[in-house]
Image (tube, rainbow, N blue to C red; front, side, top):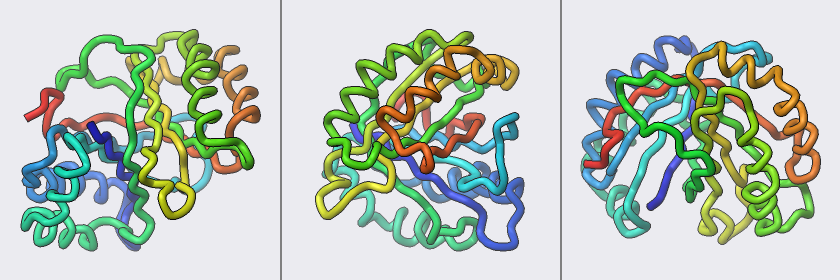
Length: 231
């Protein structure tokens, strides 16, 4: 299963609120969800939290699940993609600034199943491995060392690591190597976790395996378009 993450920001002159509303209520429903190969589809919109600093690099993130590379390639050739979702991008997104990452997801804390009725807050962190660190060493450290520490965060409900797939390294390096996803009941629970000693220890550990100058985090709320059950 390919877990594709798409990070985007508003086109020039468009407010973040208008951008998010268009993404969730127009683009996702009328265009992207029509692509037949997409099994599940979730749009995450950025929300304010205490550690926001300056202009946001991205205002949201879509998550798309596809069965395999063959179905992904087929999706790019459909009328629904070429004449629908792709053609609609300039209407709302700064498409030149969009980041797309195909990932393989590792669930380290499963938690309650996803639901349209449960409005959790998700904390998303993009990670770039430390210069000179082999990719496999980075992946192993994330999963076996860093990941085990994350599980001690207070009020954590679910935790996933999304590691960028090998295909993104075929002709060079990937802009990011992994995306961490942490789920909490609400913003208050997230803020408590970020103030905890456990999180301070996690931040200190970043220097062992990531380039901290490229760390980017955002808090989001989820909007299921297709799912949580696969169609």
